Amino acid sequence: MREEPTLRIPLGVLALLVALLAYGIAVATFVLPVIANWHVLAQALVYLVLGVIWLLPLRRFLIWMETGRWG
Image (cartoon, rainbow, N blue to C red; front, top):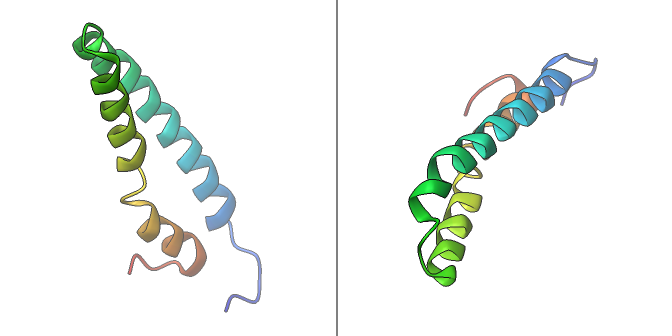
């Protein structure tokens, strides 16, 4: 357990917000034109998958924020 404050947590939160913003802009810029004419349920499935994909690296990132190690 950490006993003194570290900059990893505030910097990690800022990095996470920037990364999510970039991911959202990339999805809106590149995916939207491709799926714009698809059926609404197919679009919903694509957005559901893309909305979950960003969670995959989150566990290791949160571990790093808390401990300073990636594993």
